[in-house]
Amino acid sequence: MEQSNIESGTKKQRRKAVDFSALRQSMSRHRTAYYRVLGITFILACIYAFSLPRRYTCRVMLAPELSNTGGRNYLSVLASSFGLTMGTARTGSEALFPTLYPDLMKSVDFRTSLFEVPVHRDNDSLTMTYYDYLLHEQKRPWWSAAARSVIGGIASLLSADAQKQPAKGAGDVNPFRLTRRQTDVTKMIGRRIRCLVDKKTLVITIQVTDQDPLICATMADTVQSRLQQFITNYRTSKAREDLEYSHKIYAEAKRDYDKARQMYASFSDANQDIILQSVRMKLTDLENEMQLKYNAYTAVATQLQSAKARVQEETPAFTTIQSATVPVRPSAPNRMGIILLWLFMAFVGTSLWAFYKDKQLKSFLGIS
Image (cartoon, rainbow, N blue to C red; front, top):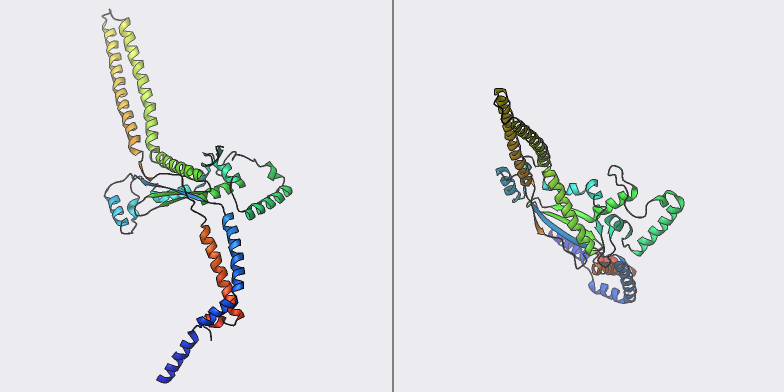
């Protein structure tokens, strides 16, 4: 029994053994094929890699201020340091928590608000809208541009509506019902602009990728400003409504007080030398009415100042950890990596073909 086990183990070892010397000889015999295949592959890989347009990436990092700083928030931050997420982090009146910011930036309303942002390229002073830039000024590989040209020409011949589309500008934008071109640009914006939130530190990272470095940095700064503006408007909406109402009742109280004061002054001047008791009573009533209006006016003025302070208190603060800056080097494509990958795949494919021609493929795969 033991001898049979030893023999079976020896057979397995023989079956797994690879004759590297024979494989090297096989590769050496077909070195001409390697030269041809690798040479052609290198040329094709260079054509492919250098036809891809360069892309630049700009990142902006923000740390938002949370409205609730009580004990429950402290426990949530403490739990997040251990990789846990507590459901009680969204407490109080804070409904727009930082983890919802990526969903906000994915909304159609937010993306369409970027259509009319003025931009210009790094080597060109011509200003255009971001919508026109994405729709008309994007560089594409030569094969993609040729295919789009052919398809576009056929579509323009078959459809008369294609020529009725406006060449420039987004036109009237209705987020409820976008046109086909507006929908395409919205999808392009979604692929270029991303928002990431670290669940542990709640640091917001806005990442913008574009073919032009200046437009990349411009849009990163714009998206940061738009996001801050939206969050500020949301957080201060109730306080601003209260402030507007306080302004309204303040104007009414001031108008009533001025009217009562004018009536008192006019009646007092007209009856200055009259000592009738009825006149004195009327003057006293007017003075009391003016005092009541004055008390209401001062109370409303105090309320107005409190409403102004409330708006300032509710305005969130953002700490900019990393501001937008024009990238110097492209982030993609990795042309050298693409060429090396193509050469590696060509080398492997040629080697398998050479082993197959010399009947060394089974030996290479460890098959008896």
